[in-house]
Amino acid sequence: MSQLRIEVTLAGQKIALATSAEHEPLLRAACTLVDEQIQLAVNGGNRSIERASMMAALKIAGDLITLRAASPEITTSNTSSNIESEEIARLQSEIRSLEDQVDTLMQTLSLPGSPRPIVP
Image (tube, rainbow, N blue to C red; front, side, top):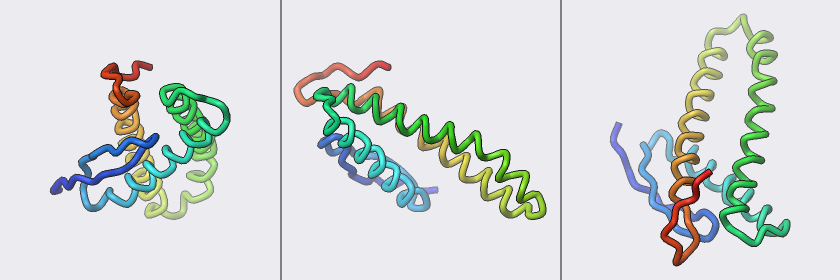
């Protein structure tokens, strides 16, 4: 898989990321979701980008936990199709990959002019 570099904007900061052509649309969608959640947190009164980013991460993590809790029901109702089970496994793998990328971004994102990384 060849890597390509894409540029996205999170919390008003342009960030270059490496990804494969196959995963680029998913990564861009994830970045859009994260940026939207950060903006909602900022608009909700969080003046600190760091705090808004953490609030966005918590919101997305909560949504993911809810989705995972519902996943066994979805898997059980679709046992007649291995294709659907394989697709669910693939999507869960992509979600884990995106979680890792978000964790990495959260550790390196800092306020403009501030060299310190965010430490959860």
